[in-house]
Length: 93
Image 1: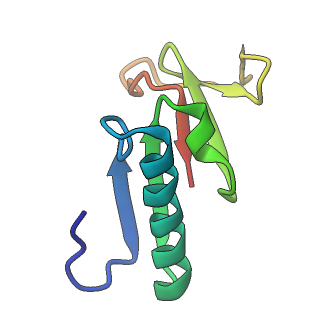
Image 2: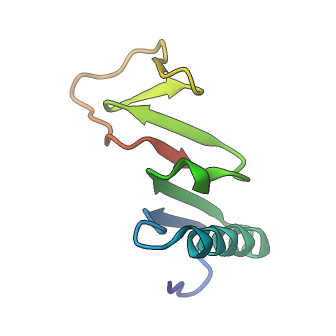
């Protein structure tokens, strides 16, 4: 992992995908620590629900729509039909 400067937002797309569980937790801990030390936001996209523990906010997407909590029900809100969201299960902030 490489971070140049002190960015206000760190985007991490599947940062633990090719790692074993132990190393995955270490990477997520490192991202959280960097965010706290630098007063940065960290936005992580992951399919591994185990890696989202300890984040302040977690948003879940199913079939391109945000869903409420763990029940998987779509949120009741209007979306523009021309805007498509990526289809990934969890977005941790």
